[in-house]
Image 1 (cartoon, rainbow, N blue to C red):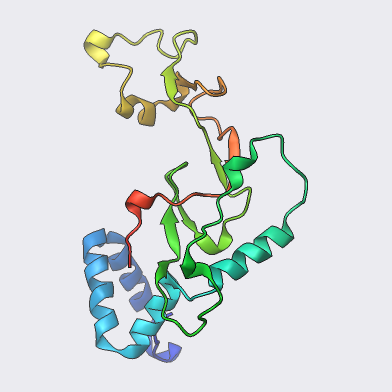
Image 2: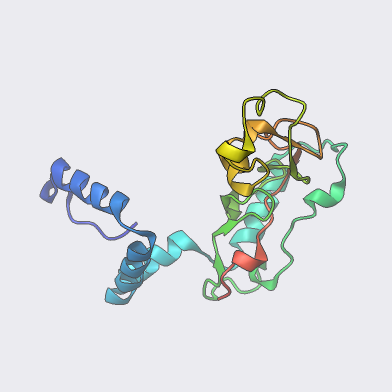
Length: 194
C-alpha cells in the first residue's frame, strides 16, 4: 500500500469523498496518477511495483504451491488444456535480487477476464472452446422481428441476450458456465512487455 498518514488525521468523510473521486475517475486519469505517483517518491514506487509486478521466483514458487495443494486426480479432459506453466525465464529462482519484470495481473485469452498469476491453479478458468450460435430451437427469439428489433446474430446481441444463444461445443445455453476448466492462459496480445 501507499505510505499513509496516521489514521487520526483523516475523517471517514474525507476517505469516502476520495473513494468516490477514485470510483468516478476515468481509467486514463488513474493511469496518469499512478505514473506520477511512482516518480514522486521511492516509497510510492516500491509500493506500486509490489502490487503490480512480480519479483523473480515468485511465479515459480506460487505454481509449485498451487500444484502441491491440488488433487492429484487426472481429469478426463485433454491434459494439454492445462499445460499452462509459463516456461519463461522470468519465473526462475536463479536471480532473486533481480528487478521485477513481469506483470502480476494478466488478461486470460480463454475467458477474457483479469486474473492474478499467483493464484492461477488448474481450476481457475472456466471457458468454452466453441462459439455461440443462435438458438433457433428455443422460444427466446419467438417474438423478435429482425426488421424492427434488429439483427439477432451479432456480437452485441450475444452480450445483451446470451440466453438466446447456445454454445456449439457443449450445446449449453449462452449464459452457462464454461464447459472446460483449466488454468488461465495469458493473452500475449494484451500483455505489455517490460
